Structures are given as structure tokens and as C-alpha cells.
Length: 320
Length: 298
Image (tube, rainbow over all chains, first blue to last red; front, side):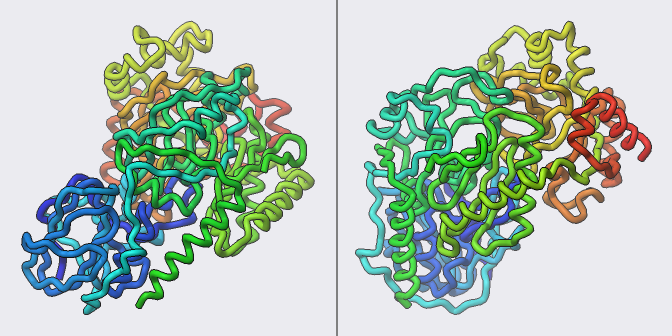
């Protein structure tokens, strides 16, 4: 019944749509970095949208099925193979006992999602099956997958032969606009600092994981001032405070970091804005080197974008 | 939105899922108590669509699901809570005082520190020597005495799972202040006692960190497998408002406690206490003595 991990890839973990209610003790939401792709993979195989799936970064794993099952791959553009023969992504596929699922080199995007009919049946921790690496909880034994792991699967026959229509499959570009709502401690930036943030492009560095995405390219200037008591001496320091998920902090003013779904929940760096919820998947599919522009929008525009994003999710769920 | 409410608090959106309220730019016990009280007020209302209520040192964050609740409605609710707390002058808490044994100047954090001197503002000094000098104290021993002398209050949790921030219960002129590392380390031993700005912290897990390292405790503060009796109902030991007294220990005692933790028999020394801000402010040292007396009587 289980799926055997032959090769884990670079970083493969088990994620559902995350947990809530524990951010105040430092436990972030976690969950699939690209929620749309994770939901699509689940819907394809006949699961509910929130079952646990595999999330693999930059490189796919090699998996072996120990009994007939239905599987689907979504997310980053990556060649899919079953027993070495090319197979389509964004479609649900019937596999037989002993079949091996493997992947080629990603050609766009950063993360693939692999859903198996019945869902990955790991224990629920604090309301979710999602792995949170810093806290060593959730997923499979509180860690990323290793060769030789055997992952239990829930009972479900599955639905082979489904395909997400082409126009509903995001194509990942090396050049993206990410919408942000300015605020938080943006008043600490000088006019030049703000302009460097939003008028010039940034490049995603190789420091990009479930916790945060670090960008380089420009330097931000702060308004000089006497630091308040408790804040620390650097002008980018604040009295340690909670960080919104998606917020952009700029330690020392040089490299903005977008916190993602495994965010560190708080700290002492000034944040200058927050990525809107509708663009978190887009950030999550950025690979190192991706040219990124931060485009400020109002809170109402952010809410409107979220409605459109949720409509796309709904349309996906209503396909079958 | 950059409108100000009340005197100095500042409301700001963290995009479409978060509202952040900065009560004060500088740290104080009053701002911290206000954050905690607003958090409790909101929590008690149990509002559908508000998923996380997160009081910080001098600010707080509310996370919501805008599909379930209008963000402007969230703002209204939070402003009303802030108003109630200000009017009600919530200035005391029922809490507990807990002892944390610390092996200061230990070989583990010293070894880690020595690997990252290129990221430190004073590469020729240890973190403790640097901290003593920054606070005009004559020696490392005098610094440790100040650190382990007066108690601290848990003013916030987070960064990573279960990590507590501590704010020392002494007048501002006696607060220990040390800058963070120039560039953060990529490694910190689990259960390191760290310090940055005016805050001390215990690193709950091994990992990156920018706080100066002073010592290590043998006692877990994060126990996801609920192995120790004090973690029977929670994987996280500290709660906001917990008062903490550090006690300097030597290597033999460190080893003995380590063995008790391994045997799953270790119990935290702790006692319930009431904390009244105004009484503390009237005479901090006397008030602290009373609190420590309650701990030692437990």
C-alpha cells in the first residue's frame, strides 16, 4: 500500500494546506508553497483539495508504487516519467504495482506537487499533516524524505484520465511582477530607499526556501534617526515584533527577504511591505535568478486580486 | 492606511491577511502588558475568521481570512479592544515564576562563537567579554551576576517554535543592551541563552541566529514529543507573561540535570505569582525579591 522513496530529490516534504492558530508561539502556517498546484494535484486524483501531497524543490524524487494507484503531478514545468517513459503532467495517471515515477530537469518554476489517490497518510500534528522543518514536526517523522522511506497512503480508488485544461495551468516565467501592499515599517525608508524597492528590478538569490526568499540587486536607504530603546543599533532594526507571512524585511538594507509559509514568526528587522496572498504562489515558483519587480497595490486591490485568485481555485475544484 | 489611533499606536496592513498594530516603537513593560491584554480581549471574543492573535513585545499582529471576515471589520474590532484595554487599565497578571539553570561561559556556545568571529563586531573578544564591555561592567562575572540577578518576563514568543523573548525587570538605566552580530550566524546550539538589543532569548532549536551567546541550559523549552512531565499538555513550555529567574550552574550540575532530562524525570522549579505593574514600578528590587522568595519557597 505505501509509496517507497527510491531517491528523495533535493528537498521533498509532505504538505497539505497548513495549520493555523499557533503563529503566536512561533509555529507558522506551513502547507504547500504553491497552493493552487497542490489543490490541482489533489482534485485530479479524486482527493479532497486539502489532502497531503509531496512537494519537491528544484528536482523531483524517484518513487515506487507498491500497489495500483492513481497519481498526478502539477506545479513547476518538469518532464514526468513512468518506468522511464514520458507521461503528462496536470493529468491523473493510473500506475501499477512496481511502477516507478521519476522526473527530468525542471524547465520553469521551482516546485512540483505529487498527489496520490487517498492522500499521504501521515499523522496530523496541530491540525495539519504539513511538515515544518525548523520545529521538526509534521510530514513524515518531522523531517524531509530520505531514500528508503515508506509513506502510507489513504484508501481511495482514484480517478485516472482527468486533465486540467491548458489555460488553467500556470506557466512559470523568469521575469515576474509581485504585488505588495506597502506599510508596516515602510516609513523608515527614505524616498530613495522606497524608490529602490519598487522602481528597480531585483533578482532572486539562491537563498530561497520554504522559510524565505532573498533578493539582491539594489540597496535601500533608511531615514537616519536615534533608535528607540530596545530596538538595536542598526537603522534596519526594530523592537522585535511579529512578522506577517509574506512580509518583506531588509536586514542591513541590502537584501530583501520575503517570508513564505514556514516563516520565522517574529524578529527585529524592519519590514517594508507584504506580498498579497494572491501572489504567494508566484513567489513560491520563482527559481534563483528570477527577475522580480515589487509592484505596490492598495489593500482594496489586494482584496480584489484575492477574489480573482479564489475564483480560479473554485473553478478548478468544480471541474469534476 | 497609516492613520493613528489613541496616542501613539499605529495601524498598518500586512497585505490582505494581517493587521499589525504598533503600540510603541520602544520597549517597555507597559507596552508589553497592553499588547498582552488586547490579545486576551480579542481571544475571548472568539471571532470567526480571525485565525491568529499574536501579541508581541510592543506591538501585535492579527491574522485573518478575508474570505470569512472583512478586513475593515477586523480593524474596527481591534480598535474597540484597544480602547477597552486603555480604559480598563489592565495592569496586572496572574502568572508563574520559573527557574532556568544556565551554564554561563560554557564550551558549547564558546566553540560556536569562535567559528563566527568574522561576523562579530569585536572579533578579538568573546560574546560575554563584549557584552560586559558594552554595559560598562568590569568583568564577565559581573555581567553574569547582572543577567542572573534580577528576573525577566516573557514578553513574546516566536521566531521559531517556542522561542521566548525575555525582558529584564529592572529600571531602564540598568537594562543590559548589546547589539546583535553584524551578520547572523548559520548555527546556534539548541538551548543557547542569547541576547540582542534589550532582550534575552533561549534558542528552542538548533539553527541560525544573530543574538550574542552567553550560556546554555540543559532544560528543554520545546519538546514536540512530550517526553518530559512539564510538557504533558503542550510542546512549548513558556507562555507570555511567565517570569523567569536564571540561575548560574557549573558543569557537574549541568551534567546532573542533563541526566534527569534524559531519564524524563526533570521538573521545572516554578511557583504561581500575581504580578501588579504599579507595585513593581514603585520599588522594582523589593518586588523582585518577593517574587524570587515565592520561587525559592516552592
